[in-house]
Image (cartoon, rainbow, N blue to C red; front, side):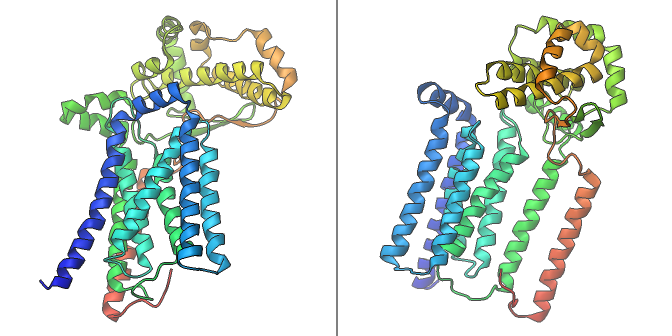
Length: 419
């Protein structure tokens, strides 16, 4: 190996070492995340996380501006427009998460990971495919992050967090691609770069497919094979097949059970479930959901979540400072109560959570009770996607990727298209 090869190898090693250290730091935060959130919340308030992300985005934006204006002397307005747009999107999504500002930390973690990935992949993918390679690798790390989180007791898998991780990495790549526009060794995308990107895309699709196929039955089988994972049976599964039910009086709501099954369970479990709800009325809500989880008692779990949402919105409505917010909150409480009365009828009467008729009557004049409502309780982002259709789509994507790479290999030259 020549001295120049050794230097290149060392550069690659250092670049990927930074990627590994950043990814390791992200994974090490997972077991302590709740403790960190509680500490920060008690001492500085949960909004601290949101302000931290905003400060980091602003500092990064100003640093890049300084480099472009002072060091590189870039005068093209389009660079700055793209940078400003990406920074604005980071801020927009941070503000969108303000009710759960700790979620915005994903942007901080995966934005930094996106930077290190670009530096590492640039040494082996010297063309515009480097942005796709960095994005797909970051998405893969983000998916493993969520899987690791799911394996922690008391933590959950959330496909939306996978999306946030991917968004953070992706926005950084767009900012670099169109905002900074670093010089790349090759003006065209090489066939070997396409192969690397194809492999990464296939790995992402396969991993997401496996996660989306991890239903409660499969989680139970996994727990029975590995006793140390028995606690997963009490946690929320990665994927449940849910249905959307429509009612002209209410609107729509989601459930793990058919309408007929809801009615049958309500009839058969009235006494048992009513007693459980009464016994737990003054106990911790989250502990209730862990004890009577969606896997083993879906009816009871869903009913309790509907009750919680109804009562919380009713309380918000009573305390609201503006008429608009009051009407919005009471409208939700009213509709959630209709769902409970319609589909959890007998158990609701036996539970001690039934609203008195005068309470519902007091809300009716303040809202448009005929307006449609869709309850987010038990909503699944991909409730409409069947497992079979998902895997057919993944297989079609695999075949397309294989076909593309075979075509490029036969041509024996770089593709003429640019991203």
